[in-house]
Length: 435
Image (cartoon, rainbow, N blue to C red):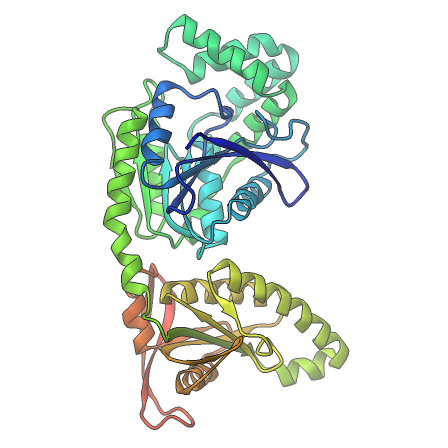
């Protein structure tokens, strides 16, 4: 199928252009290309990458804000704004879950999204990545090029072309300079260079819980190998490989191998029909909070938290059970244990921001479904497990621990067997801990 260009709107109203390759309905991979290269200006190596990745799956890429066919006049190129762009493209394309690939500074966007929406990204690949801008350019170098861009854009384009196409022919450098002239304004180019130098995504990388491959490629004199090692060390369980060639085809083949090897972990965590992973949570010490805040203030905060929890549940692949949000506790079901555990981390963070800490319990078992509700002993156990958790803590049953131990990128602390109210046999509980 011929590539199709479409448009969507980011959270701040910025128009983003994206292109789909391959057949709709196949498992998708969404890539964040290196700035400043927009769609239509790919090298032969890049074209080979998309052709290979679109074989047997749907591949999607988008023009970074302020470049190419995306909205050109912008004021914000921050990491948060660009993560919102990726989110808008994923939603517009209709992807509930997808593999994600980020190149160079685009790797920060892909990793930042994976950290914020762990249930949406199945597998993550970061190529030519770095965790801090100072790993690839000193501040004084950045200042010099930014000043040149704003003072003399034609000369700056030639300098950037020499940097990005180092070792290439004069004709290739001229072509790159011409691409810059057509793809981005001088001011936006300056903003991107400043953004790249100010990047520091060490905290975001440490929060990634998606199976991750970090790829180091030989970019002539641009030796980013140390940066790649740093990125891989920051992401729990990440795998690092070094390729002998920059070739897009070699990269695509390495990715396919990684995708094939890691697809089994998803199947392990998926439950059979009629079974669900059940997450139950409620506000810790709600009675004391009500007395301290007053009924009206407490209910207002609870309503705001309710909305945020719905978003977190949906973002992590879960289904919120209507009538079971905050009034009677939070109840949601998931198809995989790792999704529920990722959601628990997200809702704890949401509760902390709202000043309403939660305790969370997760269990898996057979359920009875009626309309948008679930019943059964497994639901009751999930509620009782939550009641055993301390404020800000997630406890899971042994069933959930067994399902998630190879796929959730967390560790489990054995809390022993507990007698739970209304449950005939003791249940062994485990506290979720960061890996």
